[in-house]
Length: 192
Length: 183
Image (tube, one colour):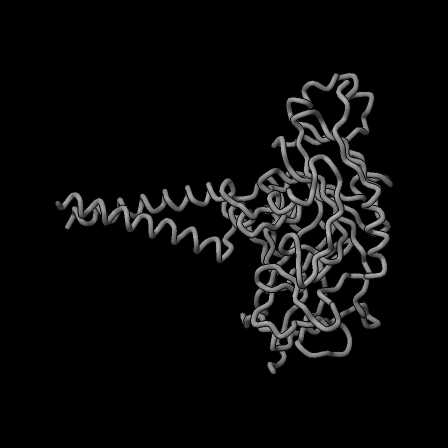
């Protein structure tokens, strides 16, 4: 009797623990070898044969194709530098410098990786179409309502994700130090 | 007391095994991975341009909307594959994925160093059968080994400005992939 109870308890707890841990890691997007610069995180190994089993499972589940290391590297941000969630009803400013790359693009998605509908049909910028000042610096305003300059509309959604992709870059290939930056700083302005 | 602890320890160990095996099995069980999404759109061993992602629909999540894309869904079981892709004015890359979406090789136009990216894709067995003298005489012949018989080749051409999207799409339209005749 005791044996039966014990083995039933063990099997139930094991199933709950194991499946719970799998669900948790997949929904949270756990992967090893993260390269974090400020609010931005990339997983360069996910674009190579050295991809870890967690990233493999996550990619199989979402249906995306990771950026290959010979192509470029993709940095993801879900919060600003101080940890504020990317709420589409707030306005954020991205400014500063980008690491060496032949081209870069920045794109706004919802958490599932879909583009967000907006009035001007803009979903991101490339390094060539951004408006810069005379020093070559740029600022991008991510906001629900129209702004002067480089305005990236949020569509007012609850949570958005920014992906900064560097193409033809040594980042993520050459070394794994964190001095590879700088990546653009993200600051929250105000919420409507 | 000790017996209860033993049961708990067993549960944790077994839970770990369940966790690891489900994570490892997931790519095999996934029904909506990139290959499954592209299969109805892309016939085997043919280069097919893909629709640009929009807010209403996208073939895969997290596609870069600044790029024109084309895909070749390959199957090397009947021979090796030849890929020819003219480079677009801005930036062109070719990424090779296994059936399970692992990016095993990627090259861009500058690394390829030519106006046209030309590659031979073969399984390790087919590579071993390539006559050695042929390998030497064609020194600039780029041979890629695919770890899986089936997989995906993604061709991406950047449109740095929206007006250049037509040129990027045009460059991809001239790209081809196909099984090479056995010699």
